[in-house]
Length: 359
Image (cartoon, rainbow, N blue to C red; front, side, top):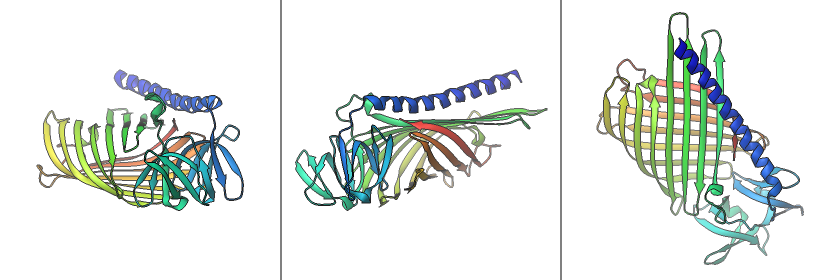
């Protein structure tokens, strides 16, 4: 009982620290705005001009940080042209990329991209997204990401649920590196029993962009799910895929390949496996304020060395931007294994709410 009480105390304080850390990142981002230089110019079709720093064009919204109006979102279809000193990676609707600095084009509804090979003029409707590449900044300033935390406590059965999550991204001209971390801890104490379970994953992805919306991806990470009898799973994945839908409000990708894993199980056994992997991701973006994003990921692992075994990981996240870079997440997750460790359950699922901030 003392151990359970200590665990709940530590988990509670750990999550509180992460919540305040998330809010600190948001406050730090806001205070840093005062020292920024705002040089990008966005020319609108109605004759207005906005001066600020372009943060990204994604799903039909151009996000601009300004000095006098904080961060604003402009519908891309209302933009006439732009001028930017930022080095941008531009994804076109045909799946190709251009990288460079943008100047105002002579023609309406177009931009001129100054690339290494010369100036390329693009129509606005050809552009699916724009992401700044921080080529002139230090390594640490080129990183971006978010952190979030959530706590749920029920007095009736002394149930405490703690969730901490973080994502980190390095964006370059022809590739991206992503790291994702999720940790869920559950502890419960009744009059006769005390229990605890842990679910966590840490995974890194290297994505190399190819032509015509194709890409290849290398991934490595660790997973833990005591409900399914897994103390630690080491995982390495190689796959290739394609963006089948890439519009201003929707994105859908599928990739497939092979995965190798080593499992340390709660029954003191271990297992090495070779599996096929099929991964899909669907992203839907609502243009209205507050900004809302729905993301669904499904990963299927049919067994190769373990015939008949199949694992499925699913997570669906609804994110609502509350204020500036502060957001609220509602997440559903499900983990399924049709051949779990003896006496372990086949499926673990839950719903998580959390508060976080991006930086």
